[in-house]
Amino acid sequence: MSTFTSEPGTRLGGRYRLEDRLAAAGGWSAWKAIDEILARPVSVITFASGFPRLDQVVTAARAASRLTDTRLTQVFDVEDSWDHPYIVLEWPVGETLADMLAAESIDAPAGARIVAEASSAIATAHAAGLAHLCLQPEAVRWTASGGVKVTGLGIDAALAGITADDPELTDTIGLGSLLYAALTGLWPGADHPDLPPAPMSEGLPRRPRQVRAGLPSSLDDITSRALGLGGHTDSAFTSPAELAAALAGAIPPVPIPPAAVPRRDPRTDQRRYDGGRPRSLNGQREPAYRQPGQRASAGRVAAAALVAVAVVIGLSAAALHFLHARNPTHSQSGKAGTSTSHSAGSRGAAVLTPQAANGFDAYHGPARDPLDENNSMAANLLDGNPSGWQTEQYIGSPYFGNLKPGSGLIINMGKPVTITSVTIQFGATPGANVELKEGDSNVRSVANEQSMVTVATRDNVFGSQTFTIAKPVTDQYLVVWFTKLPPLAHTRAKYMAQIFNIVIRGTE
Image 1 (cartoon, rainbow, N blue to C red):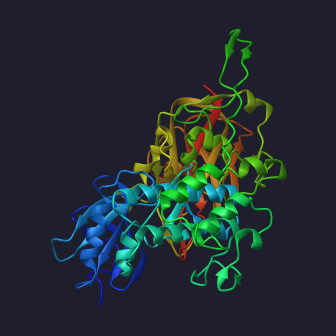
Image 2 (tube, rainbow, N blue to C red):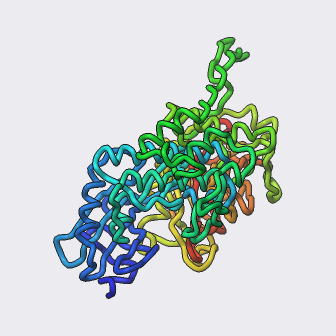
Image 3 (cartoon, rainbow, N blue to C red):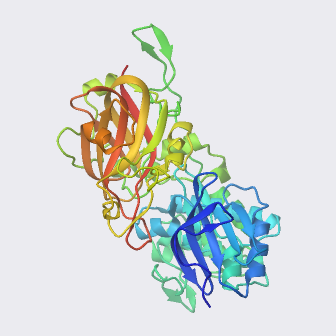
């Protein structure tokens, strides 16, 4: 059995252009694709001729498309009425729970909140008559905005031909397994390809507190009840809703940050209540959060523990960003002209508001790169969209697949300004080399890129980085120019850079 297409570039439905095949098994293939009408990345599943479970997969996808919970991956399109059936889904963003466990970048309270949010989302699906049945760490993602996204609802099980007599109990055990892994870094069984198995006692995994010291007894008890461990068979949870409610009651609430102390502006003699927090591109206060791949210092452990996903206990996105504050002592060495701390001049500079942001592929024109380095995503950095912006994916080499010396993002400040520092929230994976350039034109050409002044450089960047410009210049355009890309997690020889937020300081 073979799929009807195996080459990138194929267009489905006149709009979905297949780019990279991400997985293939048993008569189906998963692709990264571009919706050319809406200019956005999407996931597409295609099927071989005669795929035996096509009806079940299509039925599951159509059922999932009716759900409105944003914590569940959206289904955009389903086509089964012609020779080449396919399903189009939301492109997943953020790190998977598997990524975070592999990087050892998650602690017990954080993991419990992620699973609590996933449990609440799955409970919503069960209330609508749908189940997941294939819950694995790869199916739960932590997004840049501090929320959870569960992928594969119903569809993964249909693809694999998995059914269950008691779907609620199956998903409860699946969520309990995720909780066990989040608390211990071990999988309560021998069937996970990447996580080490938990030690066993009398045929069952040992309780979490028996394999990891210091875990809260309440979380140990909830995990054991979800999996029927340690004599909890009679009191085991039977539904995701029960598990979600138990976690919501056991996880301590996150303390609300203290109110800002009013301070007097000596220039206007007016009291300001902005708390001293800078504002980002979209006019909101700068979320100085850290990515889960970064380590916090000992003095920041309590705050770092409270990552993401606490809608179950009523946290706002702004509070989550506050709690993900990056470690101010963290630094990376950079090249001449850069620094990880603000100079006295940059501390006094104002936050500047850009007018526009665009992709900037100076070396490939529209014929070779019609997306202009994912130009359609650049506006996310201005309107607060948590998806942020990312380069296109390149294969074979971190140097843009050996296709060009660099590419990036260009920001229009609206008029010539003097920039003194730029704070950028990159993705969590190290490996990107970055230059900041300034110029007076946004023309997409090699000549324009080479005419720009390089004002800061840094290698191997990730997470939140502040570039202090030692010798500021006055220009209208700022370019974040990548000369090397970081690897794309859980892929083979693919590379892509990400930016989730930019804050620009200077004088007009």
